Image: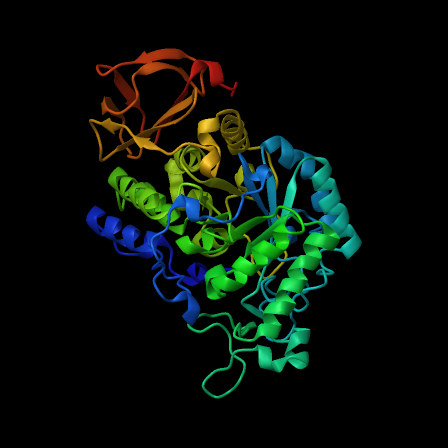
Length: 484
């Protein structure tokens, strides 16, 4: 769930010049996003911090991990945990590591949207949605995932509940009120099926922490994706992380891109600004310089040990802003490749690998139409490369991007990443015309092997590279190459 889901698609927005894109990105990257925190304790400016200020320790299983999002309702024809469990070997072979399940809890009936309602309208934090199965069937799903070396995080909706959540009657003082003194949805949103909680109440914090600990300690989940995380006090999340890590190492993903959430609470956060930038480039509203502005802001504002989630689709984007094909057109393969090759932890939304070309309904049953598609092979090859090449690992395990200057900067985006003897050179043509260019500055002169073809080549300062429209080339050190 995201406020961005109710915003107009990028294609419907006025074109921004590159200088405006850069200015907007710099604002977003420093934490002043439209998803800004509402809580007074989080509103003051944080002091400058270094990477060494990060107090959390990323779980080892996130080192080279890929996140796969499961919309349980639409993932299979049955829409159940048991049916989803049968797909786990396929997800393992695709290269997924961390499985993110959208909310698994019962859905409220009061003011429900559509027939089945939104999974982000939680009726009971300590139960599972009977639409998906039973608690024992969910435990079986988690156990099956663990046997395959997969990890399971579940969506946690701490900001609000359904109107008929059991807490409404038991603890009415835990809820925020409007100017008339009545329960209220999140302000400035269309979330009429939910009402906000009030985190100034210590007992609410204790309850929410206890519920989150239950699913980790008793059911075995490996962490959480936390809905609208910046709408809940950072101090709460910091405390939650300490308590959960005392049970076992967990992975925490924030639906937010505020920098300071990364220091003590969250391993990863959203990179909405990356998505918006690459979408603007793919739709001709910006050129490759906008990507330079994004990465400059990213490296300037975020500690090196943070993970920002890179995606070309998710449930919000698919349901309200369009399919991956609508968003990126011919640039889709290059956008996917950049999401894996550049700094960040990649996400695949269920159905992308099947070439899903329609918007899945959000409040109704609308199963994915599974089919063989070339995107599955692309994802699999890229994820294999990510795991084999240490330069592409996540957070501090990987390497920062170093710009490679080229002779066609408006169209060509190029960089290297180096970790020991693991190196990568990536070159992307983000234009609708074939480009011939030279690399003019940066650590690119080397013997390389083409990731896709296996061809060996040597690049020098006089080498010319040709890329087709929306094409890309990824080169690696020959001794670290994985077969595509």
